[in-house]
Image 1: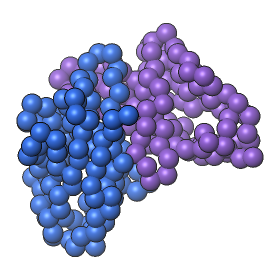
Image 2 (image 1 turned 30 degrees about the horizontal axis):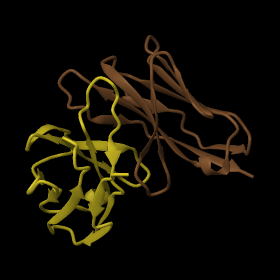
Image 3 (image 1 turned 30 degrees about the vertical axis):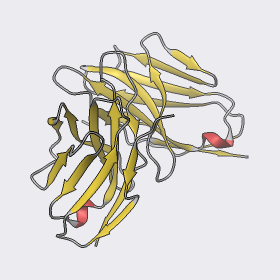
Length: 112
Length: 116
């Protein structure tokens, strides 16, 4: 079973649309959760950490359900500049030195 | 804003050759990582490094790979005898401390390694 699974995408949406990405993780020892953004052939960049109570940063809202081992990202009012691949990422503890485990990513394309 | 830097941006090598990929982590960071991403695939952890020794390594990080922090600033990844399947983007990352809070790992821009 894959450690971090995401919607395969691609998601093609018009500007202004709301889009939601889902992610599940298999290891219950996962302790930290993130959404990273990766532009084509670039490095991953942190979009936001995901906290148990859920958190919002402008147009972006992240949710975590530990019982279901499920993470989500909601993007409201999509912009052309939101076009990228969104990576669901978890980090373990308990012996691990904090290396990140990445999902394969979901590609988002926002069209005018 | 401090950033992780990597050189070269693109390395082309012949199969069987040794390559050294270089990284300069952010200066006050204590933990360093190498990841790789084969084209079209997910980012994969290779190795973590702390206090001048390997903390953890994945099954990808076999005897052909080694890491070193030769001075106070550089962090290198060496591949002794490259294979075609080593072709990938290699990302260096650093963090102050992993901690329980969810500190951000900062990634360098990557080195694209092409093995011919």
